[in-house]
Image (cartoon, rainbow, N blue to C red; front, side, top):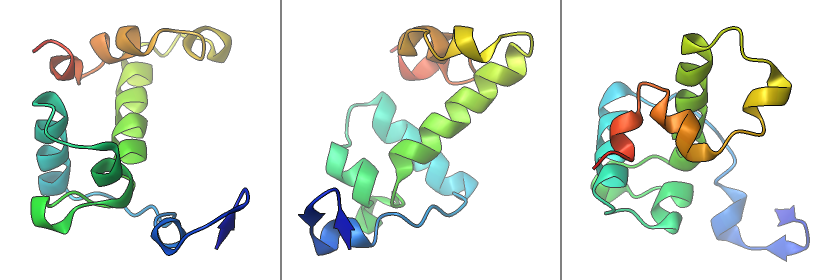
Length: 99
C-alpha cells in the first residue's frame, strides 16, 4: 500500500479499524495511563500486550464521544479548537492524565 509516498508493509495492514473489545480497551488504557506503550504499539498493535492495531485512533474516538456525550450543546467550531487535555479532563477518561 502506498500512503503519501511511503510504501511499507507495516503501514499497509494498519488501516482496518475494528471494534475494540472491553478487555483490550482496559489493557490499552492501563498502558497509556502508566506510560508503558510506544507510538508503534498504539498504531500497529502489540499482541503480546493485548493491544489492537490503531488503538490510538480507537481510544481517541472513545474519549471524544465521551466528551461530546457530556457536552451535547458544544458546537463543532468550539470543541475542534479545544486543548486535548481539556477534552480528556471533561470526559470519562480524565484519569489518563490525572496520574
